[in-house]
Image (cartoon, rainbow, N blue to C red; front, side, top):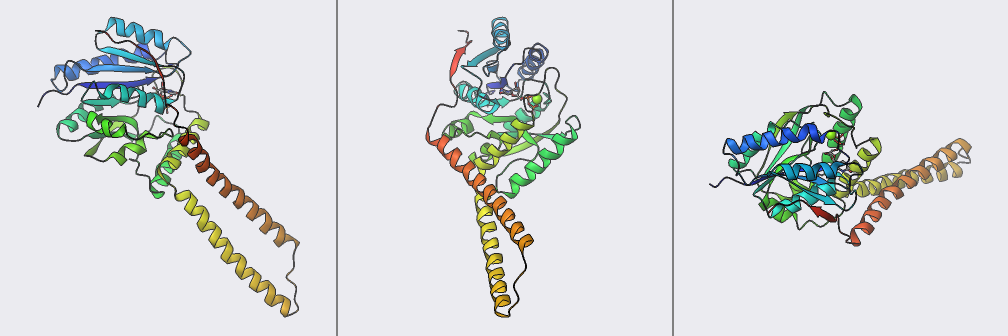
Length: 317
Ligand code: UDP
Ligand code: MG
């Protein structure tokens, strides 16, 4: 078999501090894979500048000028990690045989790439990088992430446990994936839907080498909501279920109240009425929120707006 052309796709947003540190690491890893004859010499690193406000794009252009094996594309504005990653993958799809997506901050162990490429040679089309230890994440991030993966799987979304966006995907899978046109992206949950052979490799997650995380609690929650609404409509069914349960309870209460009335005893009440009113009010508002979330997402999907716009490329002849 010919050696596959590998594109390492790396989204970057305001990463001027960490890029000079991690760029040589990525380059070394790629050269190592080429030297071991695992991937073709045509393999490249593709940085995606996600509309950074600092000098990230200047750095990427400099890297591309200095190094034959580095290229970059720049989005016209900040579109978020998932869109930036998609832009890179779609760009690479026709240029390579396999892609590996990875964050630019050195948190994901580059050595797992050897195993990923090995797994591809053994027939896998998707190889998920799975965090075996998350000691370096805060206790809060670990527990919320664990809860999220459990909830996701309960709701029927197939998400590989402790896998984020460090993953090998073959061009064949990307070709099929290009037919997934949704704007509400949750890539780690969407790739399992494509099918084909997949496997996992395990790695330890490190601390960010420099700079700061772009995923504060608010964005993490938004990503979790996007993940759930993108993969499952079970929450709507749960709302229906709660509605049915409360209807049954209220029917029984009506029967009880009427029987009491016939027997001449009035069910006493201000406290019970106020509790029931507040409880139902709360549940109704939450239910409306859940349904509204889906209606809003449907509205956004129907616009078919482009998910990203590429404004610049660094390709060398
Ligand atoms: N990122 C991006 N666009 C954004 C936010 C983040 O391309 O709007 C990139 C970022 O540069 C990094 C990756 O997504 O390469 C993951 O972000 P980060 O390390 O901040 O997240 P964390 O690892 O803390 O979850
Ligand atoms: Mg990170």
